[in-house]
Length: 451
Image (tube, rainbow, N blue to C red; front, top):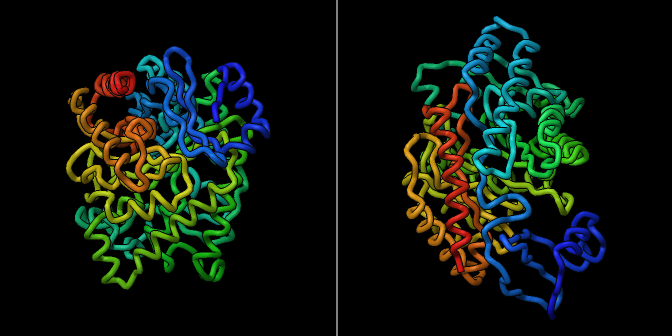
């Protein structure tokens, strides 16, 4: 069977999402070469493989060949204002004014670096995980939450204890969870006003739904008079996430990334040992967390890309844990219903690339090979070697596939954001710019040259 599409016809079919395209075919990711030839992986009865007809330098839909995770260094003026706000020295309105001033320059930075993906750099957050939990009805901010309610086996909790902390800010569910207002919708609207024709390139980053539950467990996450078990708690939380994503989609959002280090914590030997000592079935908990994500992402529109970023912590350039993805890769890659995985592979503590052998043919892996923890630039030659190694592993995985198909399942990015907390990582703004430019140039060279 031969499929002959002109770029114009395919563009119209994608734009209007005709039954012919969305009904007959299961659509995965589309790539476009520099000469505008088209390539698409399609699955329909009777078709098992369509040979590549073009080079793979660029992708039309996210994730793009050159990606970044989302957070970017805050300008000095915004960092100072955030410190004022955190200490009560300025109002939320005064902080917002400086945020509004900062975001246009952040958009310009991404464009000038050659990035297609546009975020607001998380300028409006003190930390990456802020947003969902604080704004939902039924959630209470606890500024001085006792560390006795935190699970001691979680890697960063051990660091808190080592620092001599006895309490830390957290969230407690003391009522029925309900989304009573938009969480990231106003942020999206503001960013949308700055990008005009590139709205589909905006990526919204959202804290994963498991963050508070892993931190506090079933005993300290929610009031037992409100929810008697995890299933009830997550059912309402899932609904809130689905409502938020539905409204974002109605506003034009086509790319959502969940940030959830939770899954990398399951790669930590120390956490697994601690869970076993505490009588926690970590394998069952991992499966439950995957099911929570799947209930959020199910029945999503065909043109909405949803991915999950999994790293090992990035607090001012400091990681929380170590361990490769091997322990979770088969279960996670095969069971989680997302389009792409943003993965951390910037140093030895991230493990090797072998877990990629479980990546299904319809999902994308964004390889976080460039570090945001240091300003030293990686070698494009070395990046090429690692990308091609990843493609070879995927091609020989389960199921096997041509290496060209495996290459088309890969993208490149930093391992994490540049500022998971507002103070940022120990690199300069110029080093950040060069890192972004490196990602773009490396992706261009690697995929354009691949046969």
